[in-house]
Amino acid sequence: MDSSIWTAPVTSAPSAPKLGEHVARELRHAIISGSLGQGTHLVEARLSQMFDVSRGPVRDALQRLTEEGLVESRRRGTYVRGLSIDDIDELYSLRKLIERDTLLRCMSAERIDVDPARQALENMRSAQAAQSAREFAKADLDFHSAFYTLAGHGRLENIWQQYRPTFAGMLEVTNAEDRDLSPTFHDHEVLLDAVIARDEDRAVALLEDHLEGSRRRMLSAYGRYHDVAPTSPDAAPTTSN
Image (cartoon, rainbow, N blue to C red; front, side, top):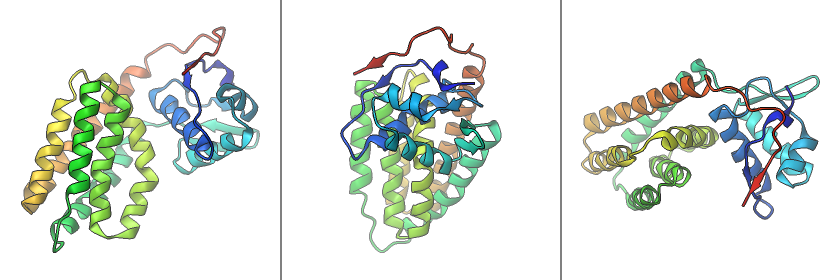
């Protein structure tokens, strides 16, 4: 399967040096949403033309997605590996393990600086009002990132940063399907309150419920988009600004 069959619109690329990050984000979303199916051959020249960038940023993007496990290198090039149900379960299982420990470390700290988390909540509120799934997902993960930084455990934070882009892609998919983002926003509000109160049992229970809900929504979305017929190979690619 050739990458030329992927005809979904892509946004215009930003200025260097973030070109590779931009290409990776667009491809990641297409893979997680099912627009780029498993086994699709990602041809550098074709992607370079599609995104109107040189091959360097495309290579950077493909390398990043390889590290995330979304694409894989074979003898004849790079192909979409995609996400399976087992991958989704593994990712959420890993996140539950590391984030539970992260929250406990935060609550045992002498001082809990929640200002970054509060700011992320405000950004979530603004994104919710603007009905922007992408910005809501970014603010959502900024909220959780604040706790990883506060925990002061560099390796835990490194693991989180490695997989954060994948979770961002999954959240964009699930948030785009949610007509009402207020329950997710409320989940974060009550979780922050529990952390501030240093209520470990409640904070861990809220976190686990939140992540389980997110996992179930992703699995539900996965089931729906894998039933969608593939894009016609005769359609021409378009670019949106």
